[in-house]
Length: 418
Ligand code: HAM
Image 1 (tube, rainbow, N blue to C red):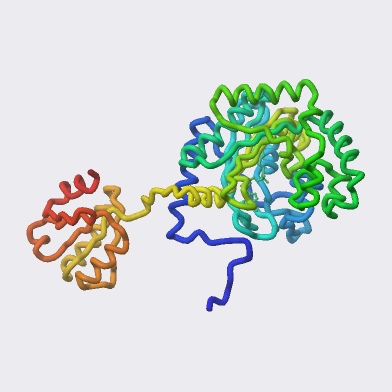
Image 2 (cartoon, protein in one colour):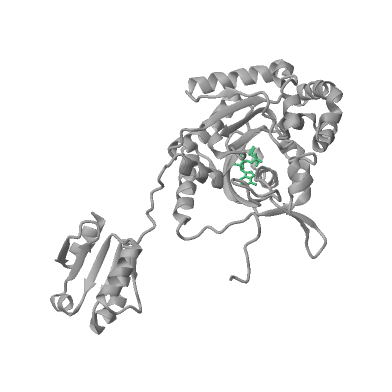
């Protein structure tokens, strides 16, 4: 029995699975590049105050889920629960907000939330995301959504749905909050204790509650869409117009409120109902006041993030095979002392020619080495014994076809690359 166990809600990416992670990460980079986004990398911990001010102290994340700690000088930090706040902090700190219209950033990395672990929900999870600063044009909302959609499509996923909503700006959100309070107050005693608190702090969050009773009461609640002012409803109509023009299917779901406090206007989610309770593949929205709130200029922002774990679960559910290129090109099998000595140089030469090569240092018999070669999934085996050395040739075996030929070094490299 192992003496140490991995912390609850975390996981190891084992070598047999890592090619899948590389594949989804590479695909995300590729798609981000298609839309001309540049990568940004921020630390995994920040001043906890940053998250309290941006994600919001009435959010579950800040209220219950942050990994907070004090350093040796008594400063309070938090492991980042999400990426947007850190990116906005960096944008403001490095004056990237002066470069309006061209600040298009993407990121990938571990995030941390102390929540009850379940399928698709972890305490350390790996997010990918984008943030787009400098324009409040609805075309940018549509572009951001299109990037997410392109990513899911490029992976081959089909069984997901895009749901969009508008949660208005500060003014219409206030009117809507009052309407919600009026609606829920007569049901106050039936609401769960979380929602009783939410009704006071952030009434919209009641719409997001998973509790059965709260859910059934919320069904009859007024819709945000009836409270949008002209600016917000025009923005929402424009977004729908662009999405339609881009042939991106969507449904309007007025109950999407998102769990973070910084959102304004557009909110959206990509849902895969195959995933069970944790069905949100990607969540995002606009946050026009956030940069200013964190001390920057008054620039608009929009973005999204998704968890790679749920993405991999969706790929599995749709039976999409991820190509595994994480195998050696060649396995070198040596017979005899001479061949073993020469192998040191040969391995260097093959790798200098960009050929990924493996061998076994301790197995001496041909049978044992061939077994290891099979297990490695190498495309070719090079057999090197006294005969081959004498002729200055190599016995190259194609492991797929079983074909074997005696060739010189240059010829061998050519065949491997074919
Ligand atoms: P979020 O909805 O909190 O938004 O998270 C986005 C996505 O991250 C979720 O849809 C899910 O795929 C994944 N995720 C969240 N929590 C977990 C968890 N505990 N385990 C596994 N996956 C998880 C945000 O984080 C915002 N920063 C998104 C955003 C960017 N909005 C604008 N820009």
